[in-house]
Length: 291
Image (cartoon, rainbow, N blue to C red; front, side, top):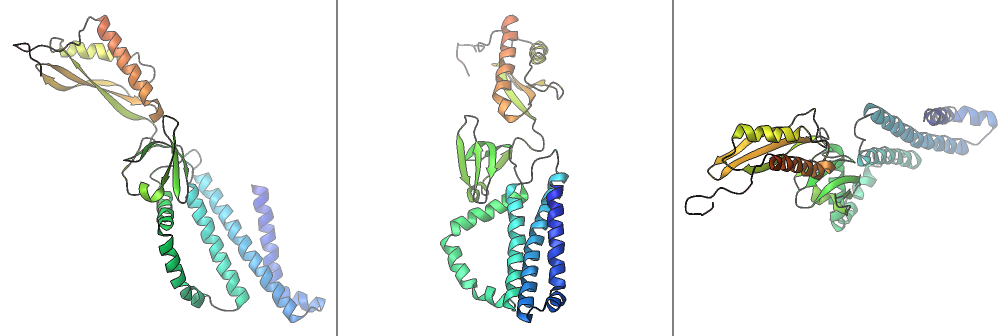
């Protein structure tokens, strides 16, 4: 990387010097004024494009170094930066060779661009939505997300028009960015990968609350898949004549382990309750009816 940047820097310096000293060099070598002028413009154009590429590489390296260890910079953001720099370089080079301001040309082509934009409005909507997603970054590559009404899975790629993700069932889903931008997005990987999940369980009213909590907390202490450092807990969610509903909370390391964590939590609690002889049958009311 350093070697490549050094070569580009030396090349850019050489082109700038050639453009600056083209006239004296042409006079020294006996070249015509037209040839010298063309050489100067050509050198300047190459310097502009090489400068745009050099600037892009510098900014990209700086962004990646600043975010080392964090989530990667979105590809759409880098693509937008590259396109902006090279379009500016192209306009500057055209202005240099045509010896005129390009504002009139750009104004005249506005109608053509408007007609073309209407014809491909869906593509344009997806593209601008992709830019917005890249700049706002509600999710990054590798994040587990739930896009309401569309799909749930892990982000694989964020493109100009579409975003691609893989579900927990290994299904590959491709979504237009314009649809994603209109939906509510839940990111299970931000700001941290771990998050709190919960499960509810109703036990007979005959089992004292303190005893029930002790049994379930003992079972939670032996669960290996959850994060022990964040702590698990058992709280009463609802109390009634038919039973007491408990909410068991625990921290999942990351979204793809949610099912495994829930399965182990419920299995451990079930084993502990059965060992203690606790029955999960509902309590009958007078008359034998149930709620």
